[in-house]
Image (tube, rainbow, N blue to C red; front, side):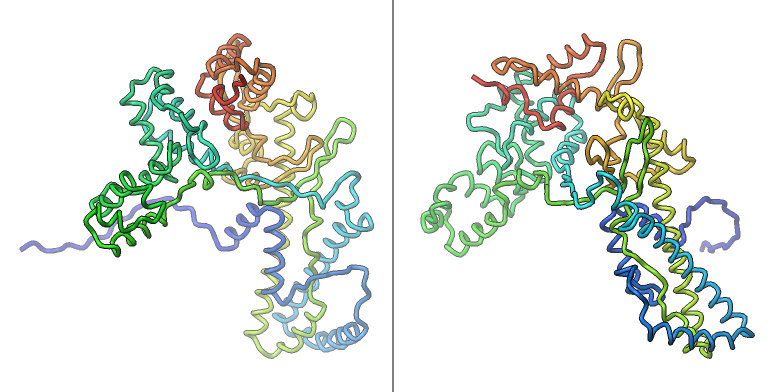
Length: 485
């Protein structure tokens, strides 16, 4: 019989452990402006040492001031209590910091530093879209398709209408033939697309759409047969006829009907972009002479200050050590909150400045074209982690002389090389594609291959697949759907 042996050994590992406060700071860094406003208001609810200042010009309540002076006298008597005295000093220091904070951000120019900036309109909001179509298309990359097959699949999806259906009379096999695919392979790829999530995209009719959403298992065999052979009867509620043809009772037919009713007859709507999300800019860019001034939009930040009753609170808990410790904890929490706000603003400003310095052509030369730029470049310049840059630019917007832009849009990948083997940005290629399509003959529109060939003639070596991807991202239809008779 074998015996278990116990032994001791050392193992060295590297783990990144983030303290709760560090996690909170990173979360605040990633928050867009309106979400940060909500977070700060929630923090004031949970921290009795902070309060919302609605009107900075309002005089203090005389009764409150009188009470505060009385508590000052009481607290002066506690100077021999080191712990309470330290708490009082920390509170006074924090109160002064907050007062200075409010003075700088809300009074330096009358009605607010940022609000008074010439030409800045803070009531302006921007609708932003969640790119669900691209998320759906990303699934094509996991199907193991060749380049031609991928382009065929891409065009199938692109040819679908808002409900997810191909146009009436659309022949999948004919499109496959244009890409050099045989009938069997074309239909196989079409079936793959039909079963992506959400299922049913690129259907040719409603039966095909519903069938794609049903798993081909024994439990669904009768329902699949019903959709294929008796769909018209189902639509017109000829349940008795279906029951007779299928050799089942009405209760079973009703059960099949209920399963079909839960399917989605318009799956395309689920990948349509949603325009109901509003944002306000986190940064304001003002070009003064030949330089850009970066202004942090603090207009929406709630005005916070130390509660003027903190002396009363301390006086009431002076004999309760647990209560004093609780107050100290809330003071430290308020300190960290203020520090996190400052660090967020400072990091936003540094990242924006680095972006401007790396996109000289766009900001200073009015080319309208962005250079290739990645998170790693900015991270290396600022000596921070790439994930920090990702958090900073996520859902953050800047009000620039060119309009409101998402910080993430200033980062663009490499689309290819030019004749001198220099990198060409995606944005550069997108601009050229749009110019070519705007100037094309409507009766003989340019195909993606035509555009790729023209780009090559102009010195940009970009594949047809890249052209199709960027054209779709700009919301431009393919050549079949752009043709005008």
